[in-house]
Amino acid sequence: MTVTEIPRPADPVLPEPTLRIGGESMSASDGGTYTSINPADESVVVDVAAATAVDVDRAVANSRAVFESGVWSQMPGSERGRILAHAADLIEADAENLAALEALEMGKLYRDSVIGDMPVTAATFRHFAGWADKITGQTTSLPDFAGQHRFGYTLREPLGVVGAITPWNNPAVIAGWKLAPALAAGCTVVVKPAEDASLSTIRLVELLTCAGFPAGVVNVVTGRGPIAGAALAGHPGLDKITFTGSPRVGRGIQPLAGDKFRSMTLELGGKSPQIVFPDADLDAALPWIAMGNFYHQGQVCAAGTRVLVHESIADEVAARLVAIAESAVIGDPCDETSTMATIVNGRQLENILGYIETGRSEGAQLLTGGSRVDRPGFFVQPTVFRGTNEMTIAREEIFGPVATIITFRDTEEAIAIANDTRFGLNAMIYTSDLSTAHSVIPRLRVGSVWVNGWGVPEPHLPWGGREGSGTGRELGMSGVTAHTQEKTVHLAF
Ligand SMILES: NC(=O)C1=CN([C@@H]2O[C@H](COP(=O)(O)OP(=O)(O)OC[C@H]3O[C@@H](n4cnc5c(N)ncnc54)[C@H](OP(=O)(O)O)[C@@H]3O)[C@@H](O)[C@H]2O)C=CC1
Ligand SMILES: CCCCCC/C=C/C(=O)O
Image (cartoon, rainbow, N blue to C red):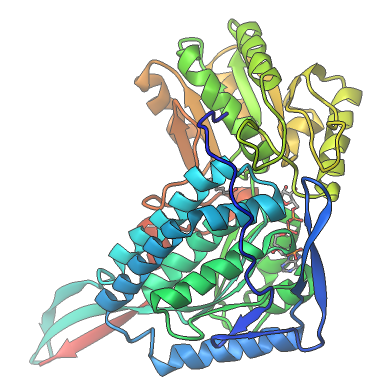
């Protein structure tokens, strides 16, 4: 858990809580709204426009027209890069306001957001700014044929119009992960943020406008998942859909590739193992293991909630993890002293408490935590269980601060337990012997591995899962190519 002292922020400036289509701010076509709630005290933040299917049609049509106009897709890559880099500067300059919006609407610890999420969001735009003029194809000579000299090359062209559906847990970061590579590639984007956290995305798109993105290159349809989200996910006018969220919704989106067989990236969370070998440096490892469970109250898809510990050190790891959990200062997201804040909403809190109850009833040993914090808002104690990999708390994504310690006897058993899950997003390995790490890495069925640490994805490296954690990659070079398509040219002379 973080300890850097950051002063309490000023109240954020709320962006106009409306749709943004073609550079215009507008209400929903039927005037509908939903209410954004502050999870720290359950007060109303603001009513936000709830897009209808008609609004989504309008947004996609505008994005298509803007894409086809070439104003962005044909702009020289160096110029696109300049605008993306300017956006990164503006995000950095607005970091305190963006972070305060996320604390207000979704309960993320302001400190973590201002020193983590917003620099990461800016870094993402800066990274992809560098890609914008480096998206190239291949060239090759070909054997002469029928008296002709021949030569071949490929073009990498932008995919077109992208629909991006984002979750509430790290709204600016994840919007940045979806927007920046798509924009670097020359695509236009319609983004639908989560109901529980729309404001930072609206503000982010305002900043993009200030940075020089032409009107309509990024449109925003705030709205309800089953209405605006479903209309966007199934829209025939899209060339790609990119979604981060629950497996339930992801499964519903997957069949919507449609007759165009359009491209799809689905990031659906995880139940990731943190494997602690007996030679691990526990002083160094424990803060990471704890962070992998309690950072942002465990509301992170990459959380390492299955703590697989060699039996010889399990008691020590358990005692140390409990001590860290019990040292948490649970409080208002903006208080300087808080090290943990609130769960995003009451439904999510009930879900977490339900899993804790299931853990108890299935016989897991509750080492600490397990209860709602007695104050207004949706606060829950960091919780540590000792259990087995068969228990529900070790099989399902809880999306709360709930760790389960599971012991293993040897490396083979550690690998077997790590892979015994329907998810495959990421895994962590703690060892002092890199040869142990290198022998285990190829055998883990996951998209990413961290050795001697837990962290969040880097813009420079691909991110995505296998199996139940989804399909496709965002970030890094893979993030760019995922927003392009190749055209092969055969040239005779
Ligand atoms: N992989 C990850 O990072 C995340 C995983 N999760 C997992 O999902 C669980 C539930 O969280 P929740 O926010 O409800 O996740 P959802 O999957 O419901 O929401 C993610 C996004 O999808 C939208 N959406 C909802 N229904 C549809 C639909 N039918 N078609 C298209 N889009 C839709 C949501 O809109 P709206 O907000 O308006 O409903 C939101 O923008 C968590 O407990 C956690 O386990 C959640 C968030 C992130
Ligand atoms: C320090 C920045 C925190 C960003 C966390 C990103 C999480 C992504 C996810 O849960 O999908």
